[in-house]
Length: 131
Image (cartoon, rainbow, N blue to C red; front, side):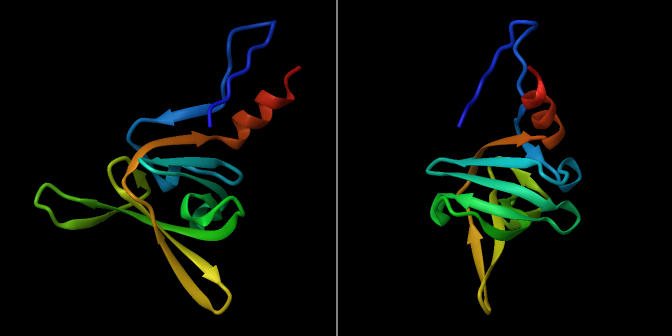
């Protein structure tokens, strides 16, 4: 998903920030949105509680209906070939989420992340409130 808008009174403004390689848990706030692109899918994570890494996840294998999810880590292989947890999201890694499904916990692991975009709530709100 890509959106551009221009205003007659100034240059092109966009609240979307492509993050070339990583988004840490410290980067996200309430109501921020993270777009996670893989080779096959795009996931959308809307942040509800950044301290607990909680949000609403949709896209990819989940479909378009958002589901409550917890972003755990990213999983990436180190230079030695050993799988390691990486805090936050990182291109080349796979995102790991846990979803509540009734009385069960469901684990969702994306394929390798090819791109990340952080849409800050504050930027989005000021962007859409301009006339």
